[in-house]
Length: 253
Image (cartoon, rainbow, N blue to C red; front, side, top):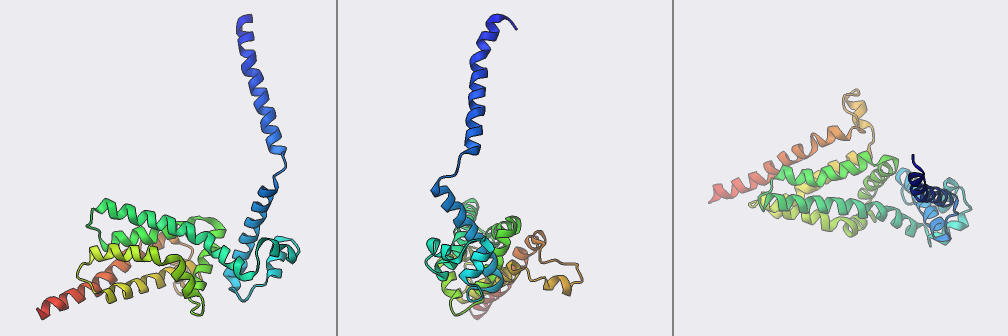
């Protein structure tokens, strides 16, 4: 390298050294209070989610959560007013994401099919996005799926939570299914959805029962196997029930 080239290279070398020093300082820089609060909040939500998914709302105390987090239980009141507020935050954190992903998938499918959707296609858009989230999202989404299954089967207050969080995306699915099954009665459409969401909740619960029943041929953790079958299976049910309704009307005419 010539002298001129060496001098020309010095600013770049100096810049690299400055960047390295800046990065080193950034790595050793203490987190701000806001960052610490956000990190602690996420840790509390993660540990609470695990406990709620195993024991439900009434089987967990704030002391239980504090013990898993490794802090005194009075600290939790600084972050959450009471256990109900904590539970709502735990549930809502995942529900927001799940709704956003499913609504986007449904909207994109509806646009792509230009008003001519199929039942199976609509169900794939609705179900597969959920199965991907809960199947590929690691332990926290696994816990969230189990919690959702538990909440969905708690009539005293679980139904209200599902009404609040999931009605818009469910009704969007029904709207698309009406296009695929224009002669179906509203009653048949909603019953068919009811059966579908029941199967989805059982799948998210991952109870392991199918593992034992099948002698290991089917595994409740195998969401890829579920994706390969669920939408197709449920579509056949929709078309059988809703199609039969249309045929009955035709026969009467």
